[in-house]
Image 1 (cartoon, rainbow, N blue to C red):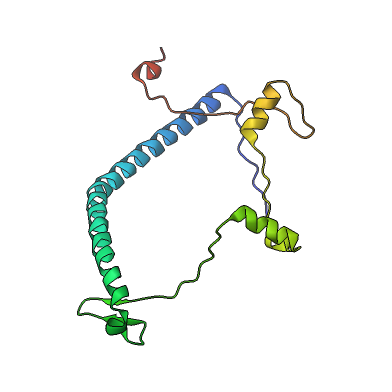
Image 2: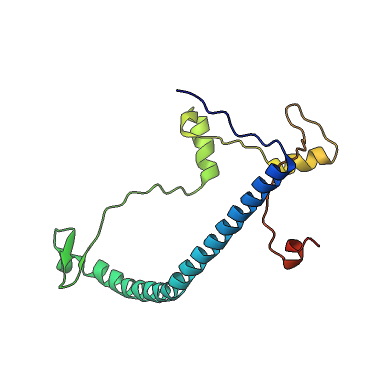
Length: 165
């Protein structure tokens, strides 16, 4: 398999041409993204309002039905886990969740019992705090503020910018 040598810019005209092409492409990308986002918004806005209203209605019906179902479970279900109406299947699903009343107490208990394998410790760097500390004059092995120049191309969007003013 032969490797193609990347194209190289040798003149200011070539450079300007590539930068301007990149700007045109970036502007078109922004334009398409804005059009896409507008279309999405036009679809989502009315749907979101209706969805919110329907979810509230659903929650009200379930809030009324659940206590009745709990009080009348033997009559509604007998020994079954579910039953049905003309339009719905209803019932109770078994769900097991871990309920921890006092996390600190449980951590101490697990530690005392030597069950540290049931504990996790997550350590992460607070980069904004480290950045501020270094900027304020502190030093740390393995950390430094480093400034680099990053090449960028952005399309001009202002008429004055386009006119070169």
